[in-house]
Image (cartoon, rainbow, N blue to C red; front, side, top):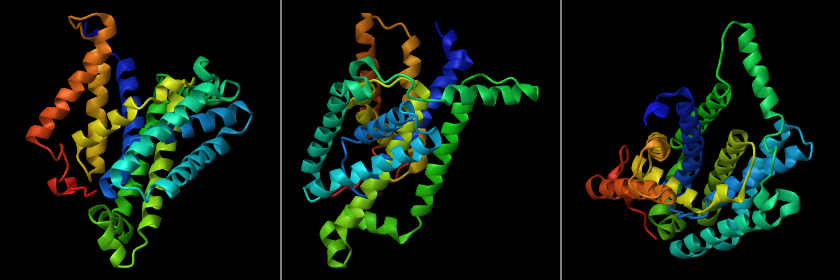
Length: 313
């Protein structure tokens, strides 16, 4: 029963998935942990990044141009959402964000001529498969035999390191200190002459761009995109990773992504005493129970600071 857990294929799948969601959740950490923006529609920007890249490459745009374009479009979408909604109170913004996320998903579902709709957008990763084979052939010529999953695994975790380094650097700048001032009290930040809306827009744009990068990597990972890949449950999984790792800790986000991904993927091979269609729900219940226990006994998360939990509406 546990033999699949010992295979390289399982660990490559799990670690790639975890890396993609670590990037996705670091964007959410910037918005929620640093700025106090409760964004329940974060998955929309991952979807925009994924489908933007997929549509561009299927239309013949070079992949090296499609990738930055998709990330930029995700950032622009974040600004477009933020301009009319960031003046709302935190709870109203959260409701609006989740509605926006569903609008994006339903639009993708119905725009069949462009996105493939429920049939999926096939060959969305463009020439990635051929490029992956070229990498494997290069190492094979050097006498090094690599599994076909290794190149993407390495690329994903290089991106994790780069995003974490960028956000860690920003954490040492006055910009992040202003974001935290906005999180604690928008009125106090505004009274000091800080343009609150501008900083919130900047945070939302950067967080959306990071989600767009996660969408690009997910496209390379899955090769075919379906609307159900971007349902609200994935935003809530990211919140679980964020809570588990700890508010304000980007290293904690990475750890949380690894733990949740291992739980989600590893429990697929366990024999639960329920019908097969109920197993997925039971896995999410297990994750939820772990989060509840964590909130009861260590509410700041594994690597978080208790002071980071005070998010004023």
